[in-house]
Length: 87
Picture 1 (cartoon, rainbow, N blue to C red):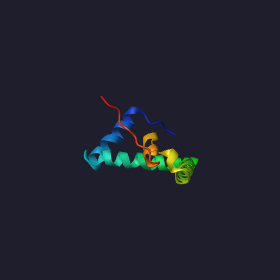
Picture 2: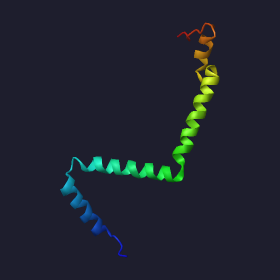
Picture 3: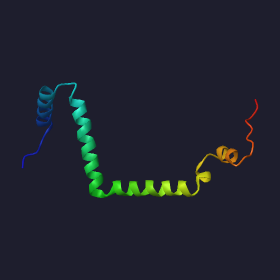
Picture 4: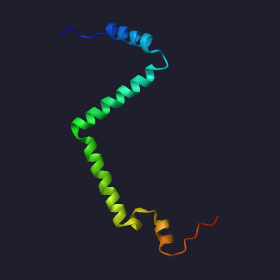
């Protein structure tokens, strides 16, 4: 199996530039990268772990919303008056 060197890579990039044009090439590169990242995440199961963390976070927020808010907002929600610092 032959190795791909810098010259061959440059030829492929030039052909891609001629075929797709300079405006469309960055879009194709971005979509190719996104597709490769999603494929890798699905193979490794990383995406499933992130979903599980989000579900856990949402469940915790629903159970105790006062602890997830800012301290000032929690005090104001409890009916205490929060004074702003004077200059």
